Amino acid sequence: MISGVGPALVDRVCIIDEYPARGDQAIVKTVEKHAGGAAGNVIYGLATFGIKTRFYSTVGADEDGIFYRREMEKAGVECIFENVEGETGRVDVYVDRGGERTFFVFPGAAGKFRPFLNEDHYSWGEYFYLDPFPFEGSLAAHIEIAENAKKHGKKVILNPGHPYSKLGLEKIKDLLKHTDMVFISSHEYKLLEGVEDYVSATIITLGKEGSMALIDGEEYRARAFEVRVADSTGAGDAFAAGFIYAMLKGHGIEICLKAGNFTAAFNVQRIGARNFPEKIELDAFLENQSNMSRDDESSLSS
Image 1 (tube, rainbow, N blue to C red):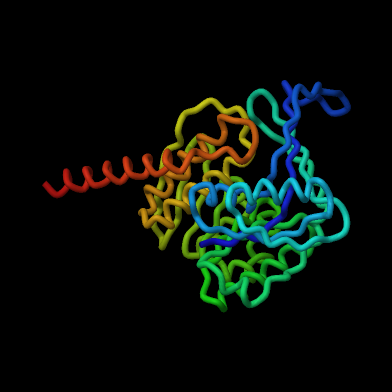
Image 2: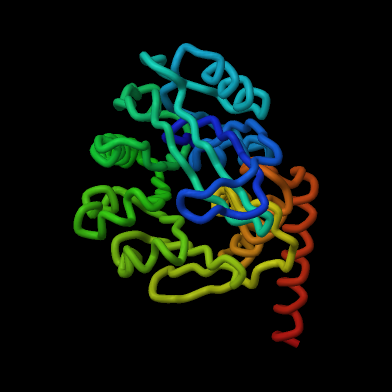
């Protein structure tokens, strides 16, 4: 069982041919509406894989807030939201024909989060997954939540994203000391190089190069799947969902990395951040990888 604490954001994905020069214009070909937010995406994905999940966030008393809750609950997520004044947060995402995306964030209710979790909330489940809220008080809020989660014996997983990564190690060390695992992109790792000294496991996505993990001084790698990219939005979140699912099922680090790559590859071939393989597909992939691993071990021992 895993809880997520992050911004509830509604994505409006706008498809264009190419980005215009500054001051110029581009024609929006289509617009799609999706529930989003990094932590929300991961929790949603895990729920579709059959994991018991909760999501804590803030929403406005508007149509988007209703839409967001409905999308999460449809996947089986237990939503524990605080209603605040203003509109539910949203992100306008522009995606060009090469799958590259640019985000414009309207914080709304997601920028008014304050820790509201109580004793019962912290007692539930085994993991907390944290993702930055789009406002200055986010780091302090997550430090409080992570500290309380650790006091209750929970494992804390952090996606620092660009908002926390750009602050540097020194600024976020009070959060890292309550963190067990970090999911981070290669670009963000350059900003937080050495983060592996603060946490038990550092998981790094490498785009077309796949992914890697730094654990106890050891480095592990897995190659990416070659697929056509329609939209890279949410690729890192899909990776995290696949990795965590494999981890919760007791698989080793190499298979967890491959599961993350598999789930991310599925996601980027479609528009929007919440495109996940069916549970049966991911389970079949994991079984196949486990069988291959056992065959390799048998070959080495024979």
